[in-house]
Amino acid sequence: MSVKENITAVLQELGNTELVCVTKTVDPERINEAIKAGATIIGENRVQEYEGKSDDLLPSSRHLIGHLQTNKVKKAVQFFDVIQSVDSLKIAQEIDKRAREADKVQEIYLQVNIGDEPQKHGFKIKEIEQALQDIAELKNIRVTGFMCIPPYVPPEQARPYFKKMKALFDELKTETEGKYDNIDIQNLSMGMSGDYKVAIEEGATMVRIGSALFGDRV
Image 1 (spheres, rainbow, N blue to C red):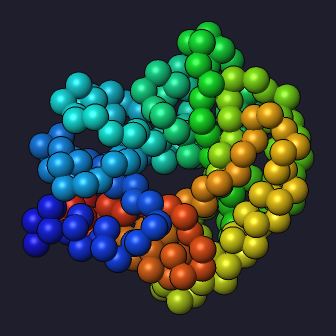
Image 2 (image 1 turned 135 degrees about the vertical axis):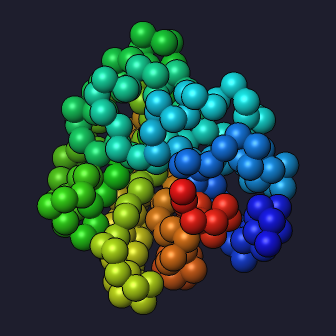
């Protein structure tokens, strides 16, 4: 099927769940096809790759979903509406600094290492509450959600991780509601091409889909 047909089919499946089109290695022409077909959010993994094609893209909301290095934060703040992959207090502080310089309040999600995997980035579950308290002191970022990547397992085996993430999301949303000026938890970004249907069943408000829309990466 074409990109347009894939987008249409997936959007019908998602209902009220938001779609982030993962555009890593995808050329501007095909990204624009997706935007014309109704995709409103594109998600890039690398700041440098996005910079190379940004001028050729139609208007859309731009999310950074890949690991962010400190030396790329200034450009990330310049380019992206939302940075989903904030995985440490150090990165949050650098984003705050660069956003202040740019006279911007940068929207972010905190990345949670829901499987407690040593090779993956993200806050551990036991670190999240303290991280939110620390980030509440920063004035040029606004936390509006969480993002997670479960262990690479078959979809049904990922279900317990999505369930755990949803429970954490609900708990922290309730705990922080009205407590901090710059924390307003609304979004839960979890689920990708292979497991997004399970993620939706377990409460994702947003899924990140690439290969199911554009085909396998080259």
